[in-house]
Image (cartoon, rainbow, N blue to C red; front, side, top):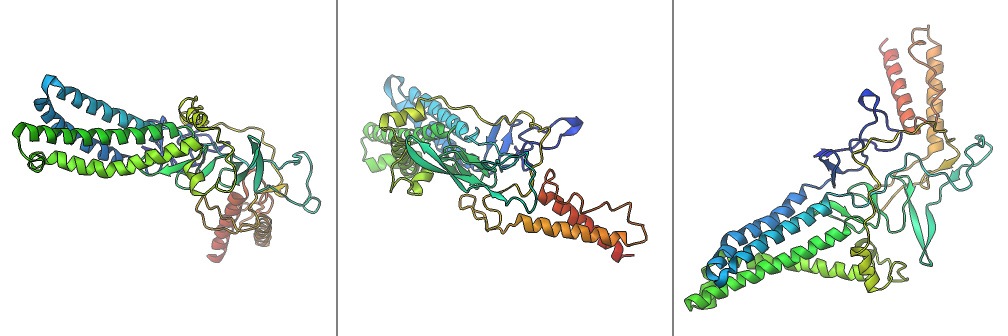
Amino acid sequence: MNGASASAGVGTGAGAGGEAPLVYKAWKGNNVFLLKGRFIFGPDARSLFVTMFLILAPASIFCAFVAKELMDRFSYGLGLPVMIAAVLFTAYDLSLLLLTSGRDPGIIPRNAHPPEPEGFDGNAEVGANQTPPVRLPRVKDVVVNGITVKTKYCDTCMLYRPPRCSHCSICNNCVERFDHHCPWVGQCIGLRNYRFFYMFVFSTTLLCLDVFGFCWVLIVKIRNAEQITIWKAMAKTPASIALIIYTFIAVWFVGGLSVFHLYLMSTNQTTYENFRYRYDQRANPYNRGVIENIKEIFFTTIPPSKNNFCGRVQQEHGLRPRPTNGFMSPNMGRAVGDIEMGRKPVAWDEPRMAAEIGDLGAGLSNLLEDKDGRFRSASPDLSRDALAVGGGLEEQGSSVMNRGRSSWGVEAGR
């Protein structure tokens, strides 16, 4: 597996040989990729092996000790179909698990730049004292089936989230129709894999019931064949007792989850919306009736992924730099705290930081010019490009600070 932590934004530098890097290698989220980007998992993908073990271990015990015994005790060879059905059911369950955890759940690609505010004219020359900064609105109103829904701005992905979209703090991605992040499958559950998630949970419930039922069938067969009590028959097949206890506990979890999500599907809600009591005080704009809601989940075409993880990062050419005081993020100038991201508030004041970086660069430049010329060729004008937008304010500020620190180090050591 290959984890990617670099930026996948548009405009990423070219890789070796002048080619742009692959998207999955330059991905900015916390995802883990397999087979050169053909499979995408969450950062907790190792939990997938635990889930597979919890399915394979009891299924193997059932086939080795229970189904084999049933083959000897069933007349007309009915024991063999029981074993074949158990093997096929287990393989089907595991395939649904991989379809849930190894595919794009509906990740929305990040923007390389914040969206332009409404009414912003990129050709207009904006002076520092002529036009006040334009702040992007924190939320926007979108009408869904005649009901107004508020969409939030995501500071991490630099986009307005579509309705029902949320930012997963674990995967660090905005996911369409975000339901929840499931640690058992190691992936977000969203628009493109919710169907498979429910099928996996429901098939696991049926598998538990199948194992539970045939374990009791074996116990009854032993009791009838040997004319003994049910307790003595249970003592003769300890594997059946262990599987009965295991599946009895497991069916409450997966069965309860199946019933809960059946309710969510019938009312067209997500787990995230339900836990936030989103529709307790107002109407659900997505609820179109039980039948239509179920059809929307199981009988509609799954939209294609918006990310080509196997492709190369698209390069942006001919970008027009935007003025730093032309627009601001919704959270600039105040503490940023996104509950869904789980981040601590961070104070951010772009104009003040720009001014401090500019003053620092100018001061270092003047100091070096007063020397006898030894550093004049090694230190360019630090203040000239300190506030250029194209390179990014944070990166240039870091560059200025680093160069200033190295110059002071030479001066002090002279």
